[in-house]
Amino acid sequence: FSKIEAGKLDIESTEFRLDEVMNNVAGMLAGQAAKKGIEFLNSLAPDVPIALIGDPLRLGQVLLNLSNNAVKFTDHGHVLLRAETIHSDPSHCLIRFSVQDTGIGMTPEQVGKLFAAFTQADASTTRKYGGTGLGLTISQRLVELMGGSITVSSSPGEGSQFSFAVEFEVQEVSLTERMELKGGLDGLRVLVVDDNALAQEVLLEQLVPFG
Image 1: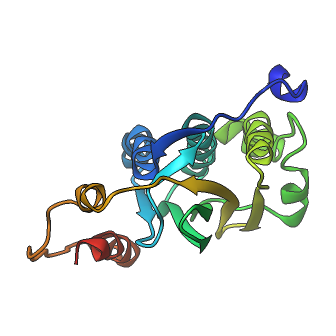
Image 2: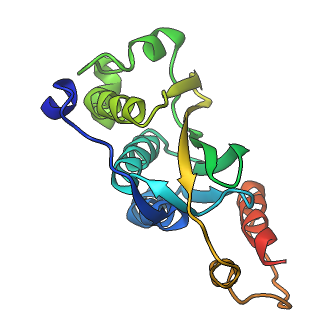
């Protein structure tokens, strides 16, 4: 945190796969979500390039922090981690990330205070769910260093959504590599069975690139 405050933290630029970053976050939180009886859904829109150039470590830290908070504040329903394309060309892609939950939600006043360093939602919420202020402040600073800004929409008792957009360079990928990224599911028939309608939509969306 002190490095961020002092402006000494650099954002790196390295090749990475976005699906691996998101799957790592989901893998770290799926067990915690299952223990609470909620679903953790991970959705990567079919048109999002997955071979990118940017800072996967910082991106993963932000997604993990936002997703962890969502799981912490959700006692029923689901948490949805999603990435979708806002704009793309052959060399760059602006991607919108969002973490949406069906948790306790916040009042407009609480949302306004949210990113003040060390600020908690309120005493009773903090006692039950733990503090969130410092982690969210760090996440906001990291997103700003990547050229974006976190926004929040929330309603008490209905849940919250945290979102931000970051631009990445798109890796040059050969046709063979694109086929490898796509996988070998062509021609297979898949039956999707889940009693959660949103989970069905997410699963079906993930199958679109495979035909």
